Image (cartoon, rainbow, N blue to C red; front, side):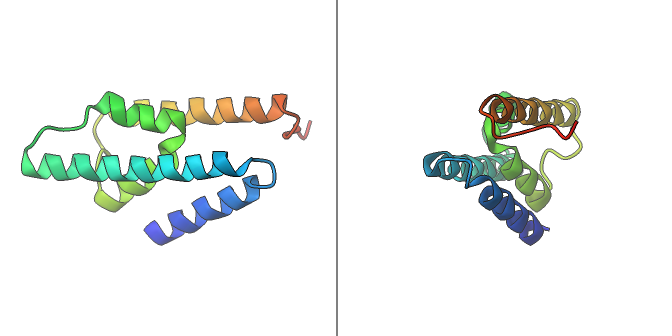
Length: 115
């Protein structure tokens, strides 16, 4: 599954690249890598019964664009996949992020509705 998610993320990034400056793409990839590592660190801390990363922090990573990395991490480490209300809040953050990105692209003239 990780392999498919990686290739999907790469394809989406490459499709967006003609419309997006390189620093934004690099920042997006770095944010997603940091999100993936944060979920991994939280899973490691949970197993070892150490201090955890607050759920609010994990959700903020997703809200600000790290949700693809979070999706990969959730599948890879089977972490935060069933705990409610985290799952509902996570998908809410994904929805808010997608609406925001769509609005920015629309206002920038890079997205046109089919209607």
